[in-house]
Figure 1 (cartoon, one colour):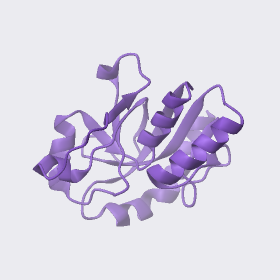
Figure 2 (cartoon, helix red, strand yellow; figure 1 turned 45 degrees about the horizontal axis):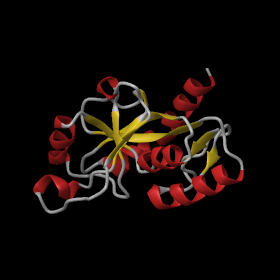
Figure 3 (cartoon, helix red, strand yellow; figure 1 turned 90 degrees about the vertical axis):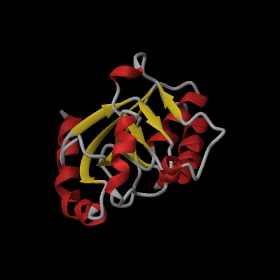
Figure 4 (cartoon, helix red, strand yellow; figure 1 turned 135 degrees about the vertical axis):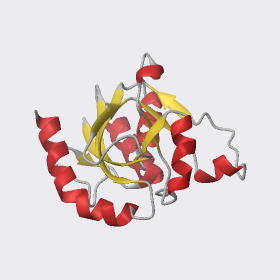
Length: 172
């Protein structure tokens, strides 16, 4: 089953589930409980912490849920904030998920030091739901912006082209 966030990120081959981790979790769980799919494949856009370039397409099976405040010791979490369906996480591009988009490029080095390359709002939730229901899962992402002060403008400027390229990549 191909899924996506929805609204601006819709694909003719993917079912929209909702933006952010909460809506994604609720809607994906409902659908999977109604009719369990043999595989979940998420498609969407991502911001780069600096090493991945605009329009790079990345596939992953590993996500984290780290908030920016974690890096200045203003937060902690009791949850397992890394999830993966990969057999070898060391070869994975790790996707960070938060309900907020990073706009402070000085934080990028913190993510990169933990081998976290890109951010997407939903992927952590997708993997957690899939794991809880024993469904294999993966995702494909296209970089639309860097995580800096221009993140939203660059996302908007690159969005149409990114959606076209990712659609073509998946369909191929």
